[in-house]
Amino acid sequence: MKSPWEQIALSLAIGTVVISLVGCTASPKFRRDGTGTTPAPYGEPYQIGFASYYGSEFHGRRTSSGEIYDMNALTAAHNTLPLGTIIRVTNLSNHRSVMVKVNDRGPFKPGRILDLSLGAARQLGMIRKGTARVRIEILELGEDDGR
Image (cartoon, rainbow, N blue to C red):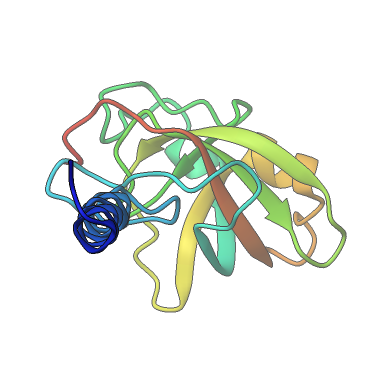
């Protein structure tokens, strides 16, 4: 039978191990781990910044994912998210949101984080202004290697 001091020491050692293991679990925030981006819980922003849109001049051309760009579809171009990722984009000035699939790379203009299809921009109410400050939330991470 162990003395009370040995039992306390054993309990403290087990507690220390448990706390250490809990500290090693993945954070619910985003992280880069070599396999891609790990999404935060639904409703937490991944990125906030300015979005623009592209329309008829690219309609019918091949996107980075190999899909044909349809300006009326709900798609977007992002520079780092894996292709095939589903995101919710919210226009922060009017709080309208839309779910889009990342199927292209861009934008290539400094200060912008996302290029939306014309259809997505229309749903966000940003056609007239051309750009909008948006919040991006990852809903489903794409399987692509992030070309």
